[in-house]
Each structure stands twice: as C-alpha cells, then as structure tokens.
Length: 105
Length: 310
Picture 1: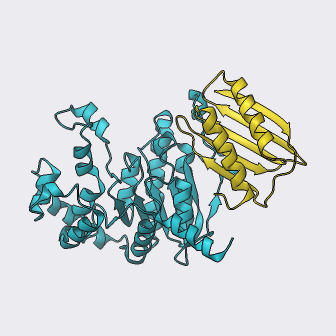
Picture 2: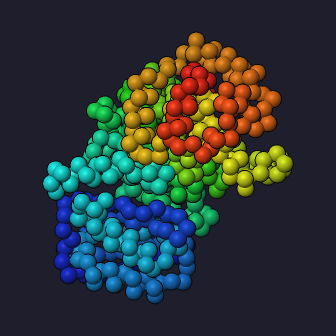
C-alpha cells in the first residue's frame, strides 16, 4: 500500500450544505471517496491510500486537474483505492464533489 | 427541486436492480425517503485492524452499513453488506457492527432487516470472522426470543454463503430473488473438497438450480420470491415483518418435523430437477428460464413453501 497526500488552494469554497458524502466502493479497479466539509477557507486536501504503488505522478496530475475544474474549497477527500484507472478516479472525485453539493447522490 | 422531479427520482430508485445497486443505494431506496440514520458511519473510519497486516486496502465502513430508519412508516434497524468489497465477507469490525445492531434491536424491541451480500468469513480475519459469525447468531436468536423479527433479504452478486448462510437460517423469514443464492459451502468449496463429479462449479446452471433463489423458494428455503428490483424487496420486507413467526419451542419442534419430512421426501434426489418433478412440476426443465411472473404463479401452487422451516 502507498500513502499519498496532496494539499491545494481552490478558487472558491464548495457550495451546498451537506457535511459529508461517500461514493464508490473498494474493489479491483475501483475506489471509494469520502468527502468531508471540514477545512477552513479555500483549502482542499486529498488523502490517498492505494494498492497500486508507484503512480504518484499520475495521482498528482489527476488531483490537480480535478481541483482546477471544480471549486472544492473547504473539502477533505479521503480515498481508499483498489487500483482504479485515472479516468475512474477523475469520475469518482467529480461524483463525490457533486454528492456533497447536494441532489447528486 | 420540484415535487414532480422528486417523485420521479423515488420511482427511479425503487425501479433499480437490487443486484446492480450498491449497499448504500439499497438502504437509501429500501427505507422511506430520507429516513436513514447511519451508526458508526464512514467518517468514523472504524476500519479492519487485520487488512493492513496483509497490505490490503481498507474500506471506511468495512463493507457493513448499519443504522436506523423507517419502513412504511415503522421504525426499523437495518444492516447491509457491500458485496463488492472483499466479496461482502465478514471480518472483525464488519461483524461487530451487525452484532451491536442486533443487541440494540433486542433492547429497543425494534425489528431488523438485513440485506445479505456475502461469500462468508473474510479469510484474512479467519478466527475473528468466525467469532463474529457466532456472536451474530447468538445476538440474532436473543433478539428473536425477545419477540423481535429479523428479516433477511438475499439478491446481491456475492449471494449469501458461509457464515452468512448460517445467519440467514437464523432469521425469522427470508426474501430471495432469482439472482440470490443461499448456501453454506459455495460451489468452488464443494468442488475443491469433493471433486468435480460431486459439484462442477463452472456449471452455472447447476449452481443456480442448486442454490439459487428459485430453488430455495420451491423447497421452502425462503418465504418470498421477489423480482430483482428495490421496490420488490421493499414490499417483501414490509410483508415479512408483518407476518414472521415468533421463535418458540413449538415453532422449533414444527420446524424440525418439517425438515425431517423434507429429507424423507427428497433425500434420494440427485438434482434439483428431480425435486421439482416430485413437487409436481411436470416441465421441471422449464423452471430456470421462467420469468418472474411465471415463476411467482408456479410458486403460489407449491404448498412446500408454507411452513416455518428452511
């Protein structure tokens, strides 16, 4: 298992009122994302535990792309990964952000 | 959100396949809209203490979701296994959450619905998982002795095997879909131990007609056969909570007698097809391909299903 952690400053705070949401499941080629509205201001943290070691650079790019596209300020994303592909990761991150904004679960 | 679009979403949630839905989707759609309150949710991060030792990924809810909610207006406790995480297998934390829920049910006199989706005990947590099964069975039976109904729903991709099959057998009543399979030893386990002549686990038709929902319904292993939709499981759970039998000495005696009768009647059958013919189904070979409606009509004619045993 590999532990990765990325901290970003988002453009804006995430909208919505929900405190937390969980999407996905830990299985081969899949991942779960727990998102919590716990950080101050525009801070954003993505904490990853992955079964596929040695893909830090790919994670870094996928996470940076996600933070750039959305505005997940104030959110902490905690990920348990079963070896998902980057496109699946991007989808789950977007799904988690949407779920927290409400009406997206 | 308009009332009309909210209603459409509820309809969509109820129409979704139980087999395809995640454990969380099942819980949300099974219960009255918005009534679910989770206990020890994923934010608590009560994960398995064993999986890191094997360098395996954890899941924040350890594959077991427990909580309370309302079903058709009535308060219930609910548990659901996520069959895609470790095959829905029981580990220490996964099991402890269900044990705790069943103990709470006894204290609160509140009925329980368990959505099974499990291959049995998680191999990496062998002893802790086996202990969990024993503790769950005890807690379940103690709840039933306190007149609390415990209903099992089986229709997930992992089926209901191993210790899950034992726990299901302790429930007040079960509902199963065609996709649901209920047994203790799974197909691969039987083949590994007894050889391919005894059971060919790659013969999917054999697996389904031996352990699948239709067979369990026909021999009385499950009280209700349901279509593979959340709405169908919801209706079955409501119906079974209303009519499940109490766990009494008289019921156990009746159950033992019925199991003996079943063994006498079918003990020499080599295949489920033989059992179905003996039950009076002339065209037994047509059963696996029957639609839900056709099979439901057939099941209603088979008296074998009316009893307290499984």
